[in-house]
Length: 177
View 1 (cartoon, one colour):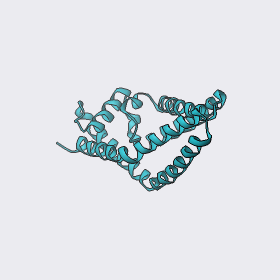
View 2 (view 1 turned 45 degrees about the vertical axis):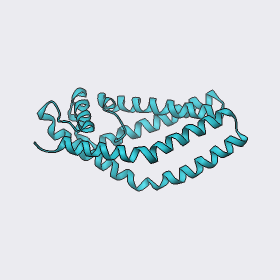
View 3 (view 1 turned 180 degrees about the horizontal axis):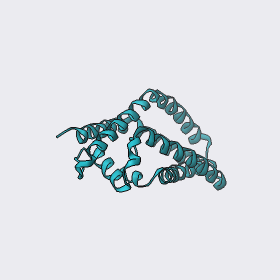
View 4 (view 1 turned 90 degrees about the vertical axis):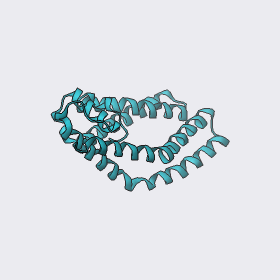
């Protein structure tokens, strides 16, 4: 929930699942295609990962911010945008929703924190796979490994600071007065 931009909240649960699923499925599907060299394999991965991840993320978003169902699409986007930017929401009637959204962002971040150690395990495996791909793999394998390592580097080095800023912004937007 913390990583997703405000525009994802534009639709209801089904639209959120389709949007998140399409983007994540396409990304992972392209990487699977690059890695395997099989378009059909990439399509299968895109559909399975996109469908599962989209559904799970949409459900998690609703669980962390149950009050979002009471708002219109435009109101949800305004609330999330204000929370992420640390600004006051234009409509004062939505202040309680900003506070609820901020609580949901904190809860989502807190729930993900115990799993951060897993990234180090994934990093070790990714570095070993990239080394293997550099020596024995195809160009597609090497490109896919490079993309995986870049994404992991961003997750480990850039994301923690960005997440702290987003959560601080949400607290600022939710603060009274």
